[in-house]
Image 1: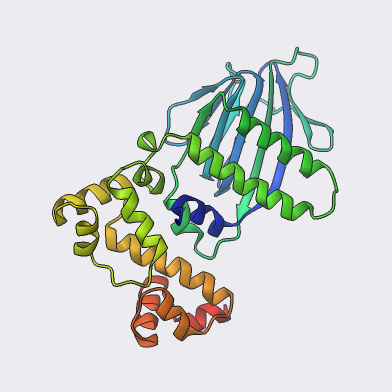
Image 2: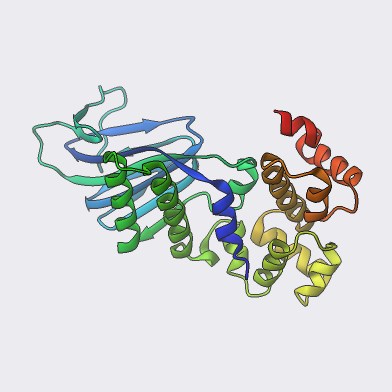
Length: 295
């Protein structure tokens, strides 16, 4: 049986970027803006404050894990941050190990943080299906995975990039498993937590080539069309047919990247002819499949 969450993470293709071990003491603050890339943090000991644009500040404690699939503006700081404009104190004590705040102050926080990137051909669509922030408390598995990523980043072992990519995939899936779909922001995770929507989502992912309409999806879910439409949009954040088209185009981009013939792609993603596929692709992507493949 196809698992839509695993399929989305697999298509995102997370790749390693930065992994750090961080300690802090006294007053300190780290600010990041306009990254647009995934960020994660695992707190080993102590407490800190995380403030993400558009959200109330969060206090993170020992055993907490946070994942932001698309981080733009956020700050991490001591519980009492330094005054605005104060000179940031940040010292790299050894490769990948950083000390924040007054070097003479006692250590009050130990954490592992990291950034990664997505190699997906349709990153925006896929990221939109994930919660905008995942916060998990007390997950030893997540802490262990972050520790393994940090260790692998610091070591120069054979096949390091492949190992890191797979560890990041497992980290994302484990985080999504632990997030509690019913409490997530609208998206795939919340849809998969809905007992009537989850089978419908699986069918879309298992067989995107079949004839699909809002009516047929509502019938599959044993709901009236209007009830299904409203529930799908509320839980997943897009209309049913926008989801179907977006998923088909994400698969089409992947197949174009693999140099699969357009006639075969059209058949595999549910279009009766190359012409119909070309029209849908151009409408969704803004260019023809051929132009996309050349680019």
